[in-house]
Image (cartoon, rainbow, N blue to C red):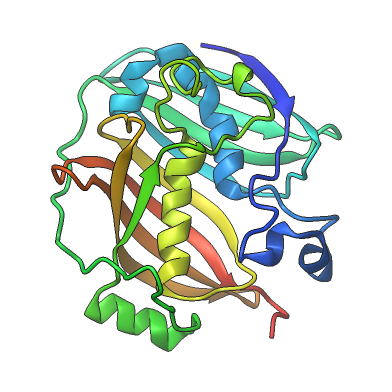
Length: 272
């Protein structure tokens, strides 16, 4: 396992509809500037797993990532991995991403089971039209989505393919668009962000935590269908949270590609 890995953080969503990634909005909530997306931070922590386990991890790897403090565009960061375990039915390790001052930005538990778990089957949720306008996120809206079901959304992994590093040459070869070009975790976890925001409008909001399981790598040109289920909502310290489950399917054959459990703050303390 790669015990230490470092790079320069990239804000991959400076023009996002979620303005927490923009300096003006982020500073209103006490941050130094626009936040690097949580899915991008997660990709940094998972990067060493792809370099080490390769296609095996893209096929059946699992990851639990918690973002605990901001990471900013242009900041150097370091990922350290520890506690590798090669016994039993899986290999596993823990990762920590730290900023230059030693602050922990995110933590991860990464594993490679000997065998994948059984994937879920596609429900057939209605796919939203391109011009679908989601209602504003409220407790009542989440309750309605929980009881009545959510809109599914379509996402395509193709050129131009989003990255999480400033130079594609620094990507693992499996993810380099100039080589194999398989979908990276920033994009795949990003699909969970997009379907969440597609079902209930939020601005600003903050991605906090994911648990993901891979079932197949996503090739260039794949159309994905993201189905979402609302699991829970709750309030803590003035913030309002939502937990959802997202499943990504290959539209061509309904094959499950990934499952993602996600937690987010959909309404920040002090927001209008």
